Length: 114
Image (cartoon, rainbow, N blue to C red; front, side):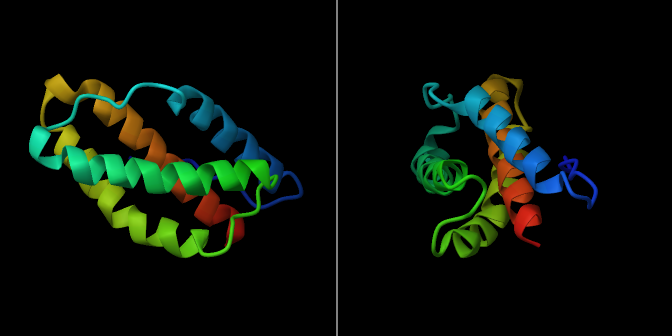
């Protein structure tokens, strides 16, 4: 899954912040989804890290907090791995939706600062 990044232009930042806000509203506050037991701790920690970055970004009107860009860059490979893992079984459909959303938010926030 590749996130659709708005094209460059005067409204790009606003469009990205709005999209991240919509994705976050769909993500939070929901219960943590069913995921493979052996990966639950790592995925919960990944979700926790993402939550901090996304809420700071939205609270600051689209400005990441100190160190958040690095956290998001570090999370990208883990998010992609989580999506691939969860896509293997229909049993984890909700987890797949949640982690696809987190991946999209990370990609959008990083693109906003690029």
